[in-house]
Length: 291
Image (cartoon, rainbow, N blue to C red):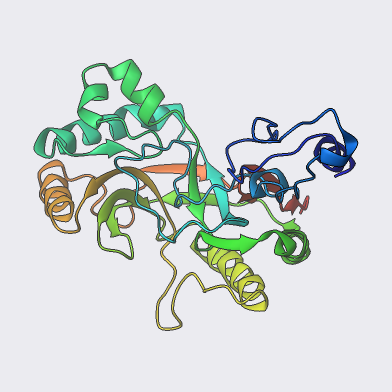
């Protein structure tokens, strides 16, 4: 702030544009006479200098393609997107089978895109190596709360409470059992996902409940309604709309006999912690206990 004050003390401007951090002096009248000198009031500093840019795209946020992304809430200066999640990596031993299923689905539905990078899935299906690396080799996530906007003064409180409630977590295995389609709240996008319905479900449910408690204390919306049971999952691809993808997946599951029985495991992953992303910064939340 001292540097900001110093820079404003030496220059003047009649521009209030937020795109310029340095005031100009083009419109200031100068005179050799002290009596004729014109003193103009300084404009307020651009808000962009006081508040870092916020990242307000929904969950699956890396990645922004403005033409295909839809905000789940409007951009407000000074807000930061909050997302709490379990990082998940698909093991190498499972990538081939999952990749083959994705190929079949993409062949029936050309409009599928890879989550987080907005790349058409068909483009990657031509090369098995690219498919496994670009579509399946990255970090996925199980969301433990809605992606919501918070104000800068709430950040420290949210992180501290999350760590207090979630810092002592035991390691456990997560079984990803079932191909499923989830639709966003706006009914504008469908996600091809793998759902957790057995191993790891009780632990994740408790973690979601803990996050909900923190959300309530900050007047933030809960993840699931009281009448709903949590349905933790990772999303691999998306398509526009809320009907077509569900039908395609159902038909492909019947033909392939893949992931249609609860006892079948599509893959298993070890719980590796909980992260909290606020804007562009990621906070490590939980600490493992040895027992």
